[in-house]
Amino acid sequence: MLTKRVIPCLDVKAGRVVKGVRFLDHRDAGDPVEMAALYNRQGADELVFYDITASADRRGIMLDVVSRVAEQVFIPLTVGGGLRTVADMQQMLQAGADKVSINTAAVEDPDLISRGADHFGNQCIVLGLDAMRISSDGPPRWEVRVRTGRDSGDRTSLDAVEWAARAAELGAGEVVVNSMDSDGTLDGYDLELLRAISESVTIPVVASGGAGNPQHMFEAVTEGQADAALAASIFHYSTYTVGEAKDFLADHGLPVRPSPRS
Image (tube, rainbow, N blue to C red):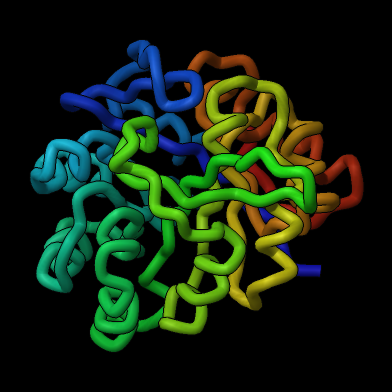
């Protein structure tokens, strides 16, 4: 079995890390550079940095903040938010990112996935997928949302499972699956969504949205069949450290990269 990854996520707004519930009511969590350094010391396997208002504001990502974060970490760094072109991707990679995440731009121009993969390799291109459960009498369905995901113009009519499979075919090397229904709730990941997407693709799947404790992370990579578990609130507000989460997974029989001991 491949090593399971634990990934803190920095949602950045106006230069500060924030965390909300279901993409609303953001509260301050700290300085992204300081937090990146902390998670690097705690033994995070990777770090994800999202400029969460760049696409909605139709502006570029905060390059200076990304550069300062990259200087603090010696683990893979994924950066997303407002990337619309191959040139935008190259700028982020030159600033220190190891991977780039595209969401809204990929929905609006799916070939951007292929162009990015052709230029930088599949391993550099991450599909960010924000999904909301759609009520129906039949099997569960999820719709892809873009930008903040709340306005009527942010609905796409794209089926999340089908979109993940198509993105993989176009060249995405990984997909971060974020349940908008679970985001920030601390009630656990949407395991049905994770399992449906994991079974539809052969690329790594990262679980996002809903982690309230290490047990939820364990469920994401077992029942949900994800390859990694991403979390924010439980780390930002010191409910758990990265090391404690990884110890829990290891104690329950999952292979993880050991965290450094102080």
